[in-house]
Amino acid sequence: MAPTEEFEPRILGFLCNWCSYAGADLAGVSRFQYPTNVRIIRVMCSGRVDPTLVFEGFINGMDGVMVLGCHPGDCHYLTGNYYAERRMKSVKSILEYIGVEPDRLLLDWVSAAEGERYAAMVKGFTEKIRGLGPLDKEKPVEELMQKLIAAREAFAQHRTRWLVGKEKEMVEEGNVFGDKVSQEEFDKVMIGSLRKEYVTNRILLSVKDDALSAREIANRLGVPSKDVVRSLINLERDGSVAVAEVSDSSPKYRRI
Ligand code: FES
Image (spheres, rainbow, N blue to C red):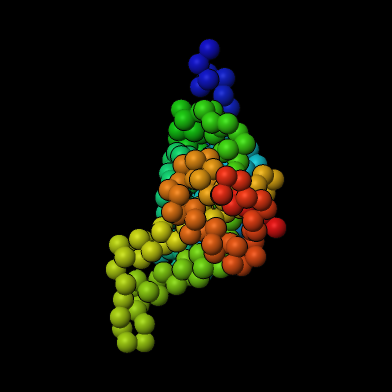
């Protein structure tokens, strides 16, 4: 039997209090029919949905995550949905990088008066996830979990949070001299930084229980050896890993 015939997607929905949650409420009151696959968490604004929460959802067994907020220009806190859009764009980019379909994350807008739109959105997204199949369909689950945990940790890093918080200012407003960074330049720095943090965190997870050489880590993660060596030097310097043994003239590292 095809997996899509039996599979019931598990979907996590973050709905902003002022628009989307009220839209969902209206859908219920209006008795619009829609699938019951979404588990809702009410947040005050879509801008309050930290990227780490999206990964937390996937780590805890969700097949898809929806983030719904007020339409652009209607955010109760003016710019929350703007930040949500930027953050979810970065999340999608990292999902793709780690081999998870970016379409498993949906960011969209529903007003308090759009009960019908909410019902249609839930229906469409549920069908999309049903078509994609379970999150862990083709991969060893342990490896997928390590990837998701490393991605979550990448978004939790101070440097990532600083960049996310500064994007609007750097791209749209400029510094005190009015100098701006183009969106392309910012995206390049942001994605480069996220990928570097992701690799670092995957290394930390890999050497948690096993002592491994740089080459073994590179092979296991499918990352160039030079990137692994660079990260190991930094991790050893800040005291996160140490040489546990030397085998065939190669140091093997373990997490401290
Ligand atoms: S209050 Fe709804 S997106 Fe900000």
